[in-house]
Length: 171
Image (cartoon, rainbow, N blue to C red; front, side, top):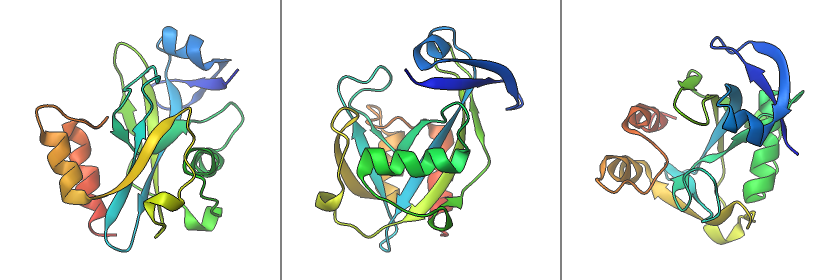
């Protein structure tokens, strides 16, 4: 069971803690993190979500996940990097990126806190979490933007996220 802290529209903890699935079913606001993994070629590592995922199966995404109850944002980011792609970094390697983003919709409403880190590993050297992902791949930033804009968008990103990828070009 994965327990999440429920937050209000300002991101403040409400005192409620509940199972992830219940929070999703009730569409209660909770915290998530997302990490841009960037290499020296200015490429971003995307991971393809497994076919069995409840939200956005078979779509390309960032390394991301929920912030467990009692866990800091940074600890959640470090944990997700280790669990999903097998990289072990220190908190000093993790950099805050952009403003938090509120996603309010009919299901899975959440607040995302963004970070980035650098890695120059080859795709084959990442150890992927098979239950969560089917593959990882380095993409040029402009290619990701083109994918987002395409009619059959193969990513989890909506057009409002294009500005985040544009901002990455300056790192």
